[in-house]
Amino acid sequence: MASSLPFSESPGENASSASCGKEKILIAGSGPAGLAARIGAREMGMEAVILERLPFSSRKLLASGGGKCNFSNMLSPEEFMEKFGRKGAFMRNALALTFREWVTHFLKTRGVETVLTDNFYCFPASGGSSAVLEAFSRSFPPVETSCEVTEILTESGRVIGVLLKDGRRLKSSQLILAAGGCAWAGLGTSAGLLLAERCGHTLIKPLPAVAPLNVREDWVKTLSGVSLDHAELLLCGKGKRPLWRTQGNLLFTHEGLSGFAALDMADAAGRMCLESGSATVFLRLFPGKTKEELAALPEKYRRNFGRRSLRTLLAEQEGLPRSLAGALSVLAGCEDTLACRLSGASAEKLVSLLRDGIPLVVDSVGPMEKAMAMSGGISLKEIDPATMESRIVKGLYFAGEIMDLAGPCGGYNIQWAISSGRLAGRSAAASAVGSAPSRKQKKGK
Image (cartoon, rainbow, N blue to C red; front, side, top):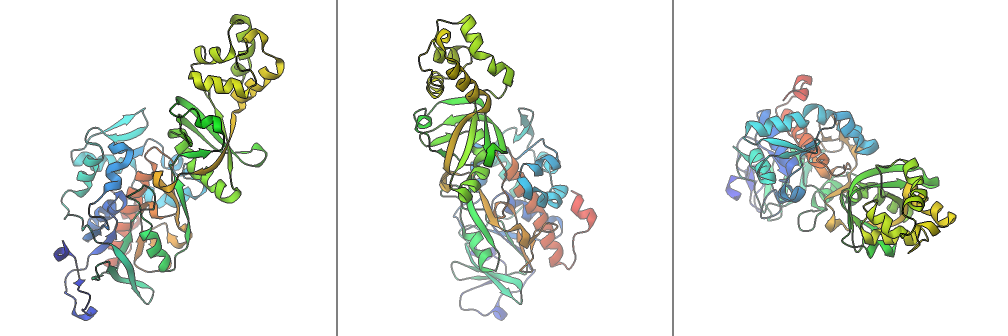
């Protein structure tokens, strides 16, 4: 598709001999951030060209959520930002411009109805990720695939174009880096991060986010394949100070823990592992039960089921998988013990494990190839949150996962990609025509 590229130069041509025409914004990356940036640019009267390094476009979007594409959720903007931690306020301008209502309206106008799962998670009613991709691509030229940007060309502190891997140069005063991060084997890349770093940007060490937890305890690994519909993980700092709490389904693996609750914990646990070498999380098997209910279990078992073993009762009365019930009874020191013979020490230990949680040591998260998102990336201090423009290089904008801002499972990261992408596209277009987006433009559809 090289013939459709704007201001294209062959390797041997000088800038002055390049073909002339209306300038177009360049976007590196064809994920939801890049697609939304192209829409934002057109809303402001500018055309944009998406450059994709792979021979196919939007593969990460198509793979999201197992192809179902959970693109947002029902939180308010303030609650949404809180889920990204202390850096979440950076999103305020982007969310004010583009949030859930804009996305659902945009999809509906293109024939894609949306539904809620658990009255919280937003999905396409049918078609999944492919329906979202088709809606965001309709009426636009195809993405330029196999077009890898290898260098950002600058002059006097501002963007003047890019150099492609095949040696061609593309001229433009506006470039949006929406190249994502290095998570997800075969789909992620560090190319965009390195491009920004070579322009002078600070790179916060990328780590896996939305990824499995690798734990030290061998008994966990013996339960590989066992799952819980609802569990809670609590990440604690010094003195058992709670730092992060997640709830959801949990899957035991041969390396540790996966499932919604574990994936949500990955970013916070990974950062602690980086700083301290490991992280301690507490697994609560019955987050729906009160402390009083859990404390009463040993006596309840003695009174009503005295001739039955604790491991059997934990499985039959509390619904734990039998293998997990057995592992818990071993940890409490009451393996095969009858309820009527449960010692005070074992009863106290069992209640502690149920009430406070089973302590687990996380040595690492990931690896990156198994992560569905990346934490870390371009430092937010070097990006203007009102426009997504670089504070270092004029005409360089960022969108999506490439920035040091990662959310948990549940539609957070796709919504952020769309919100930041649309703002970057509108800002780049406004700059290209010599004006900044007005307050009305920033808040309107």
